[in-house]
Length: 67
Image (tube, rainbow, N blue to C red):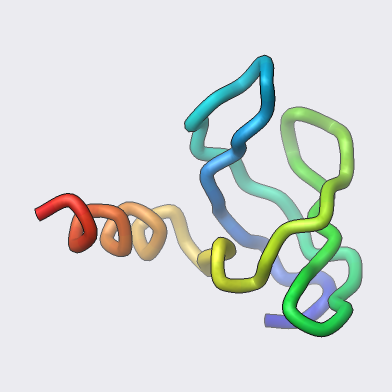
């Protein structure tokens, strides 16, 4: 993954728990990236291992965990 890539993740915040959202990587520092979300509009630091290149990849990852 690199800056400019679109990514998918599970957004966890006090007001929006467990929602699947997409965003764009702004920058990467070590094991984390700044993601600018399509909605909500606030950027946030996210661990790289929580980011997926497609919604389908995100769903498949969690499907394997819960099987």
